Image (cartoon, rainbow, N blue to C red; front, side, top):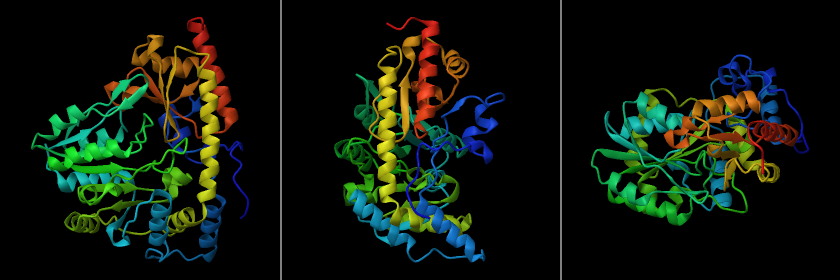
Amino acid sequence: MTGTTNFDEKINRREVPALKTHKMVLGEGGVSLFAAGVADMDFRAPPAVMAAMQERLDHGVFGYETVPDGLMPALTDWLRNRHEWSVEASHILRAPNVLNILAIAASLFTEPGDGVIVQPPVFFDFYDILNENSRRLVSNPLILRDGRYSMDFDGLEKLAADPKIKMLFLCNPHNPVGRVWSKTELQQLGDICAANNVLVVSDEIHGDITFDSRRYTPFAALGPKYAQNSITCLSPAKSFNIAACCSAFTVIIDDARRKAFQVENSRLTVNKNNAFASVAMEAAYTKCGAWLEDVLLYLEDNLSLVRTHLNAIPQVKLIEPEGTFLLWLDFRDLGFSPEELTAFLRQGAGWAVTRGQAFGVEGEGFARLNIACTRADLELAMRRLSTAVEQITPIS
């Protein structure tokens, strides 16, 4: 298979049981909605990934397998060349997915009732993981000022001083607000956590998706002090749109924690290998850098399209993203309750996006929009939003 992906190609996601277009997400009667809630892309996977999977399929034997010799070097080369982060292969463990890493980290390195800090509005599965593992969720909300989010370091310092707070879940880059945290911000967070024995568990699944030549900084790449006090969660799922056929990686520099993770992986038997995931990930990291660059250009044009439409809808504000293909939109000037906003977006605009309150009470009045879709679909969706707003209030 050769050539590049046509990102304008309309692909019927309903031909497979895609979560984004399933009734469990869209609800009954949601077939006609613009499906932009689930965080995956509507684009075909990179041709090199599909070719690698086809070659593996053609082999025809699918017995038990070990990790291919080239997979870990593919990952470490990618991290070094793209993100200037040198990681020893021996410090990396496999995991089924990022959520699995987060759950195991909370289970291993905190006790029931211990506090784990999150920074809302933040990825909703953080809440579920902590609740289901009987950990106490401790909120350190981000600060929204002049259309940009920042961390509340004063609040973080006070919370971290509590000896019953043992861990912080970091989202880097941040889902849903789109911040790509700077080195200075990450260092300040890391210094506070290290001084108070708060372990940083960093979800960095969106690290490859950044805009305007902005660089994502892996938390553990800041230096030995930060690396020793952290667990990093990585996966190519978002970068190459292979969430259904890949796994994840855990980077743990601290020997004792890594050994504990290895033992737990074995105890839970989550250390098996999937042949298709292995070849897909190796191909992605070794052959698909140019494909990713094409995706980023397409996403930036989609972002420009959204900006253009919202310039004519002053009641809806874009929180300018620095990364991820997820936009955080501020609908508060429309004056709706959370329930009214959901109804307006679904019934008025025909949108099925993620409700802001799913990311914490700080998200009320907001919604998360996925722009990793065809430009035609996004254009139509934005026109529908404009019409829906016009019907409730004149646009000045």
